[in-house]
Length: 253
Image 1: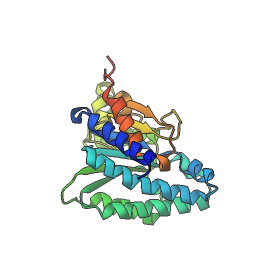
Image 2: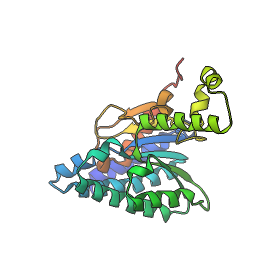
Image 3: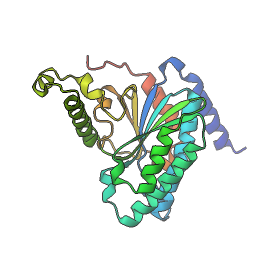
Image 4: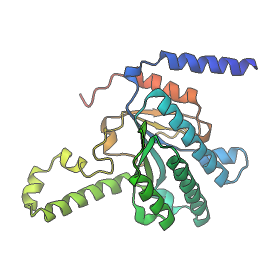
């Protein structure tokens, strides 16, 4: 074994042993950013970057299961991404569909779709619906797949659904407006019934949310990593978890 590889493995194991299981986040949001830039580094086609990013997702979920993380939200395709060229979108959506098929093969993973299915090709929307309806045999991890997702749109959809629900119940809209609470809107978000993310990770060096989980991340901790998503290593992930464990969460106080 070459010395650099040996040292890397030793450091990785040391980092993992140093983590307190009680300080590992229960829900992690991940902005899988940098696929196209990774491909450009190797003069490779964009599709190769997206495929490398998809492969990294499965590797990452394995790390999460190993560390006992129960919920992961993956930002895979935003509403803003829908403005890319038709050729790139077709390739990307095909890769996402194959990624969903691979998730479907794991009986320990449950999947929930987040986003606007009407923006997606029928075949992709159907796969998302099928996967969401599936019940895992022994759930080890729950994965939210944000495809065709926008944070502002999610809040608008939640308010719209809340109002439709009020009308269906014959509620007084004026009274609803006077008494409206944070919990009322939370009940209609895409992630309803789930804990908010404890930690949000963004790769590629960008330091912005880009509309990801705008409501749910109000008190999340954020970790920005320089590595492009396909090059994101387990040691990078462990460093993020170590950083998170060392923070004092204040929840607005």
